[in-house]
Length: 81
Image (cartoon, rainbow, N blue to C red; front, side, top):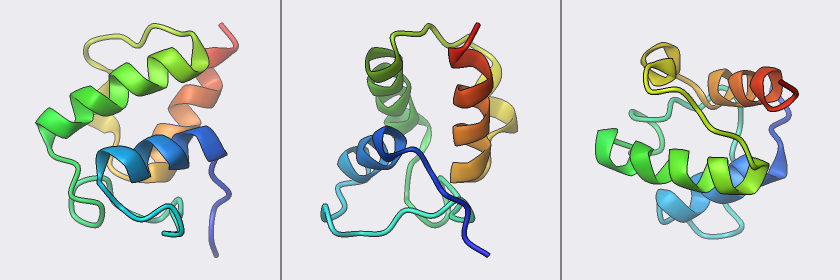
């Protein structure tokens, strides 16, 4: 079953991972293993997500994020705060 991901998150991940715009991003994909987003690229993801959602993410939130769905859930829960 595929998890629906916010289009802004998918756009950021495609951009940072240098994937074609037509690439499908699903919640089950692993940020590092499937999308190739290493720790340096993840910093780019954070910067773009903060700008897209007008939020500030904490320094230690990323250690529990493995999949795209983890990232989406974290942002959804924290963007409303």
